[in-house]
Image (cartoon, rainbow, N blue to C red):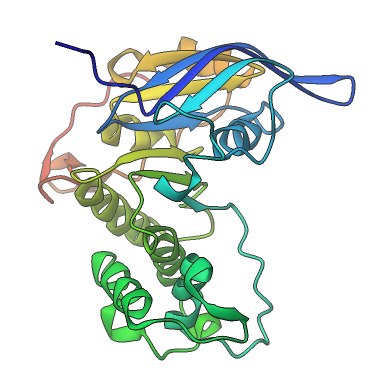
Length: 272
């Protein structure tokens, strides 16, 4: 029986901007159905790694394959949400129109053309996936931060991808919106492989199975092994860890499980 081809396979990869090394000797394999998080300090190469997977950048050395082929050839199977949405806040664009930009390849005559019904149906289905089906005609820039992030994920889903790449999907949203977002991703992970960049180790460590630590080099840890020593190695110093997945009450601490929605007792030892 033949082994299944990994969704992402990177071997001995090096990448530099001019003469400035960014990623060195990277080896990484992501199998189908995984939900993994990329963490690391600013400037460590996290976004660069995503762009290499997308084929927007080419490695100086080594190889990278996505679904067994080049990133460019596999691009139609990838949904991507960038860290910053380049949308003019004054531009009158609706939620549905934002999501349809994820299917711009189906537009009849460039940006001035019309989309076929299939593309519109896919956009509405993507909005339903993230709980935004009732917002199709709302002005995008009148939404809350959490709602905007959901719409941008819907844009990435509109092409019906098999791999979803998210760069800082929880930036600039409140803790409750963050919990809702992770619940959505847990549901989507039943149908696709997900790789996301996040600094929120407190929540991510409970939610994902593997943490890909990127600081010029790449080291993979199961979430069960993430501790203060490893965090210090990742970020190169001490920092405060803030958890959004527990709450305090008369009965003590409880732990939020994004898969069941339940709050279970949590024992915290030491200083975090």
